[in-house]
Image 1 (cartoon, one colour):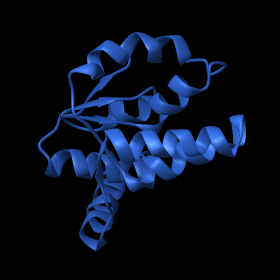
Image 2 (cartoon, rainbow, N blue to C red):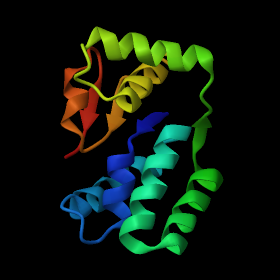
Image 3 (spheres, one colour):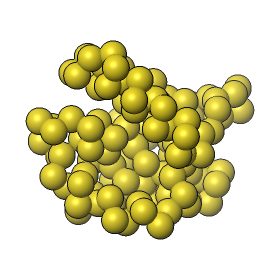
Length: 130
């Protein structure tokens, strides 16, 4: 199982995104993996794709998530854990990224597919982007 960040999904769907080609190149790695995401990844990815490519494109991405990904739904424990990670890095990780790090730690995952270099700050997390 591997955690995947919204930056990957946005790059994959948006052919004009600066990371689009790299996202396509990473697809074979994900073919044999169970993809883990959270509600926050869905919300951010669908919102960005909707703004860039229209509501139907956002809906298609939403359907991909619900049909193909394992989704962690946020609750108070996860939000508080995310806030712990947020404070640990003194706000240098976004709350969303801090929640992702917390989820990864609770699931004993150390790899994330992301083009967001902020994840390089997180202890014990290996960012796959190349």
